Amino acid sequence: MQSRAFAGVHPVVQFGFFTSVMLFTMLVPQPVILLTSFACSLTYGFFVGGKGSRRSFLRLILPSSALVCIINPLFNHAGVTILFYLPDGNPFTLESVIYGLVSGCMFSSVMLWCLCLRFTMTSDRVIYLFGRLTPKLALLLSMIMRFIPQLASQFRRVRSARRCLGRDINQGNIIRRTANFVRILSSVIGWSMEHSLITADSMKSRGYGLGRRTSYTIFRFERRDVILLFLTIFLSAAVICGCIGGVGDFFYFPAVSQVGAGALDILTYIAFALLCVFPFIIDLKEGRKWNAIP
Image (cartoon, rainbow, N blue to C red; front, top):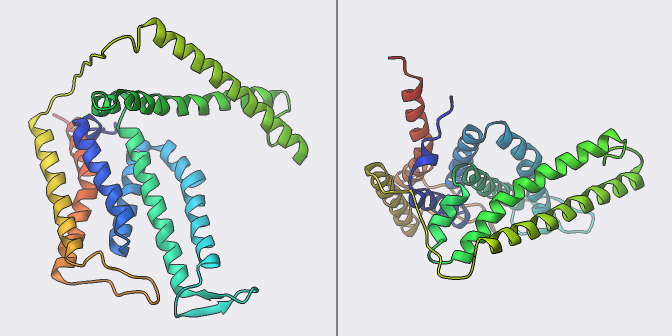
């Protein structure tokens, strides 16, 4: 049995954690920070998502990141270490290759954290967080989170039915495959429009939008949530202090900077690593309790 202890903590703690790690990943282009974020997000994503997260990583995240790595050196020609010249005469530099790898790592990390967010936060938690401040936005986000899996499931059902008729997107020549894909997509879009109308009628019949909305929540702050929230704030503040002290000042052009190894750098790396891994530690600790033999 795989534990989902972090999925059961208070939504504010979850939102604070994912916001912190994704902001640091996007705003601090430091190799150690990015590699730590990528390793932790990949490990935790595979743990909470199982086979679904592995398929998403191999089919979507990894190819997209590889594309980012390949495209950057072809269009970014800054840098002092020239490896060779492209046919158009522009230089192909080592710094642009490294920056492409860093950009791909950053993209992969953010997408993996979003994947972890999908498996951790449910629609009712999103409504709890934003329902009172922006009810329409909370409803929209929760409906999108529910609608995307339904759309993918309907696409698979339609494709499976057409495969039995010999009209799948991988059957026939390229013209026939394109036509089959358009028909499948048209069917799915038609289903989605009909489903949205049914949802709108259902909401209208329940009186949505007629008066002030009341909310009910089952989420309560417990002692564990207070400790985890304090831990998130403390570690995030430590990383911010390190970045203010110059840990995040890393440059790739015109030449790649050296990775800092001072006391402040190491403390910042440790703080960020602890911030990234503590949900995984919580799940492992809870899993040991479930699997313990009395």
